[in-house]
Image 1 (cartoon, helix red, strand yellow):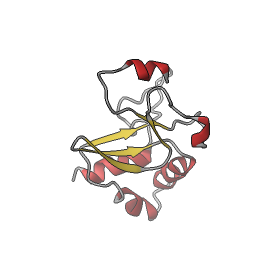
Image 2 (cartoon, one colour):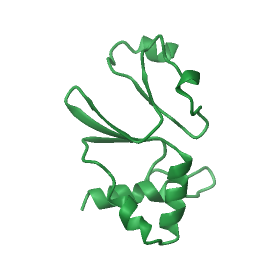
Image 3 (cartoon, one colour):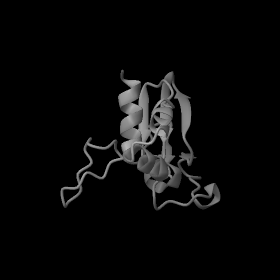
Image 4 (cartoon, helix red, strand yellow):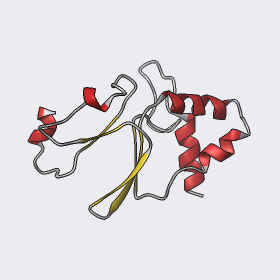
Length: 120
């Protein structure tokens, strides 16, 4: 929070939930920076720019596994990305800057489906 507060050139600060972050907003407060802690999929308008935010969640993990198995649900899930100028995620889409130190692709299949469907 102190680091974010020192970034005075950035008027709006958004922190998205990661896989090791608390679910409760009470455990992740940012009083010094006044950063917004986003725990669920959201769309925000900041200074005329529309952000769609997809934090890490167990449901995102589940949706990724559903798409990997080729479920009928995958087309339904992939159509859910709202129109936005900027997509902010905790994890990258599968195959996009997602290689681990061991060379494995660790990105989200769910997010890949969202992005591919939105850009058609």
